[in-house]
Image 1 (cartoon, one colour):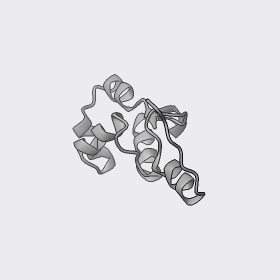
Image 2 (spheres, rainbow, N blue to C red):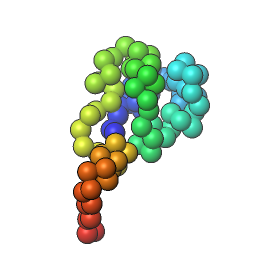
Image 3 (tube, rainbow, N blue to C red):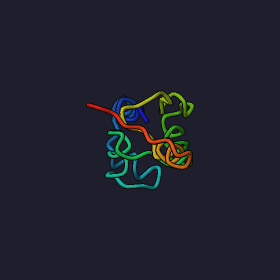
Image 4 (cartoon, rainbow, N blue to C red):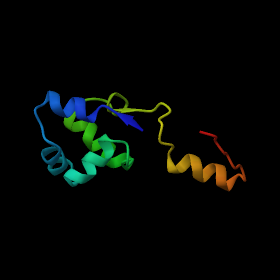
Length: 87
C-alpha cells in the first residue's frame, strides 16, 4: 500500500527511529512500511496518522499498488482463482 510517511516524517524533521519510538515499533518496521515491504496493522496505521495529525486516508493511499496485498492473494486462492502474469 502506498503511503506518505516519509514525506510527512521529513516535514516534521523526524527520523524513522523517532517515529518508531512514538508508535511503539522499530526503525526497521517504519522503513519497511515506507518502502511498501510491509503493510501495518490498522492500529499501527492509525497511530502513525495520529502522530502526523492527519486522517488515516491522507497517510495511507488505498489505491492499487505494485505490491499486492496478502488479502488479495488469499481471496484469489480461496476462490480458486489463479492469476498468472507474463512479464
